[in-house]
Image 1 (cartoon, rainbow, N blue to C red):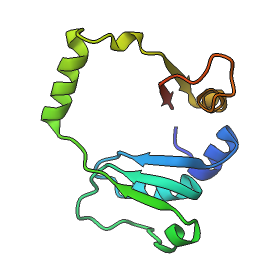
Image 2: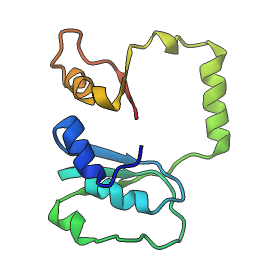
Image 3: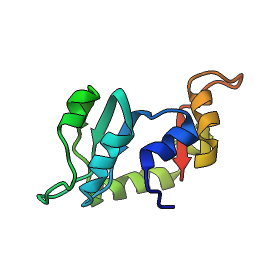
Length: 132
């Protein structure tokens, strides 16, 4: 679902901007600008997607300074690592399916965040997944 203002959409759905944003979008430099926009003041933006040498349209470095953002770069993985991970997960050697997890759609993000913050009786799961 495309929205005109992702920051406003997140604010409406979750009640605030994001404490942490992880940009894993490959070859889409505009995603970095969007990640900066949806991060709250003093938030963290982790850049894991490779954007290539193309320019980043609408990038304003002052946003980083004015919002006091922390930017973390991380090297991603390539196909061999993904294949190894899939083999490990599918081998059944470890009981990954038994690890408690919570999956929520965008309309359930407030409940998911409350659970992750330990504000629910069942406690936060080790893994939480937001599926837009």
